[in-house]
Length: 330
Image 1 (tube, rainbow, N blue to C red):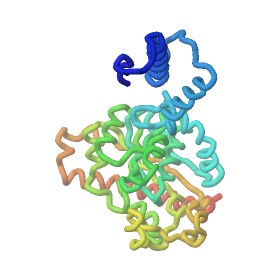
Image 2 (spheres, rainbow, N blue to C red):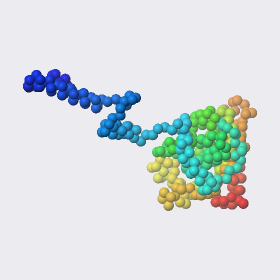
Image 3 (cartoon, helix red, strand yellow):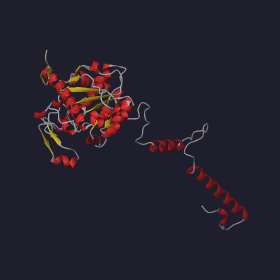
Image 4 (cartoon, helix red, strand yellow):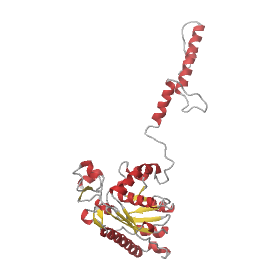
């Protein structure tokens, strides 16, 4: 606003002075209202009436869609508040829906770091969540394991933050090594997408374990490795065949066709209430190997096949322990 002294107004000197004073008062009021500091100093009086309402609205719009970060969220994104809210759901799935039977969990070390290596099944990581829940419930002093999640799943909209709150991390060597360096339990699934995409006729036949990445990490990090066999999860979403044409449009590796999906619509995505068995094997340690063992490709291949055989034997024992996909023997 230009200086009022530059204005040329008709009338006497007293009238001009009155106009100038009125303009000065108006300018002061405008500056007071539109150039007010965003926050008041301590002890200052709160605005009253309309000013208070406008101030509250400004604060609410400034934080729209935001909430305070929980102090229980760790550096890897796991949110204890979210877990606390969902534990009754996990308990229901574990005890009543899938009626999970756990065997051999005493083989686990008392504390981390440790690699938990299991067979994989299904597009959603129900198996990882139940393994983590079994470990957490078995010992109050043992931290809930983190679990590796495939790239394609964690890249879907809204999935990454939700899975991170539950302990999921993107599958890559760097993430696993960081978690092990922080003395965590980490569940990994070396079958990868091949395990999740198995059709029903190939259930419980372990796929190839990549190029020995799990063994290499265990050797270089010097951590024990616990094989795990999961039975029941591969029938919770039995894949009859895979549709690839619509999958490309959705950015998925495939669209599963199951006995319930897509025929039942949204209800078809619910997993079946099969009975599960989770069997923990004896830990594998590689302390006696030479320092350069992680660079020996032949040794890595042999140790990887031995690990694969251990997990397959745990799966086979679990299959022999049940009458059907719905119940155990005896």
